[in-house]
Image (cartoon, rainbow, N blue to C red; front, side, top):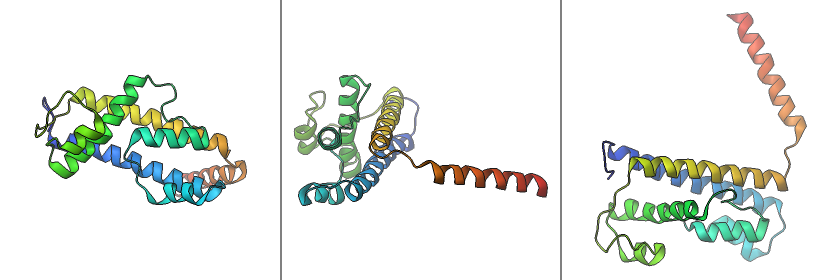
Length: 171
């Protein structure tokens, strides 16, 4: 699936990264649905629907919670990530062969129906870097709404320090 010297496992890793991002968004959405007063329609959206359409996810988080997933990113970079979200569908359901749904949903004019798509090593690195930026944006936006509580964090750090001292003494 990849052009160049990478194995198809790398493409799977990219798809896994997109799937992990989707799962992360779902977990954040679940917490927001639990902590923020919302209409039933909005709560249902956060709890039951997937997060495969990046543009829709961006709009939801920006409009409902003032969290911009793509803060500090160029619009072109966000478009590439959105395209990869659509490509995930092609790889998972069509073995990399472009279908009409992909063409309709993505607006990708660089490919044609039935064409097999490929990813490059550079594209894989770029996607992963972009996903990291987006995760940071979501994390920071969430904690702007709900600042971390210091006491449990301190208790955990104290516990880790005690465990480290104990392990040094045992060794």
